[in-house]
Length: 94
Image (cartoon, rainbow, N blue to C red; front, side):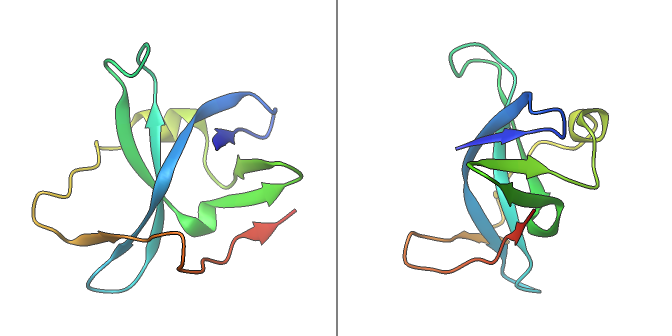
């Protein structure tokens, strides 16, 4: 799926959802920028900062500049676990 801004323009591709092992907080994993997958930056956005709006997943309470300033997502220390298709997440609908 694609993540879009309030203006409807595509911000990035949603690659999945991860959960922090310590506090169980969930994040959407976004791949942003690059060309054909090269040079893209992978970041995480807290689940409460996205909402379903029609057929789109929309960024809320954040802007593109904030996303661009975020550190790249790394899970080298296994602090996060990938959620699979059988696990339920709750997204706000607008």
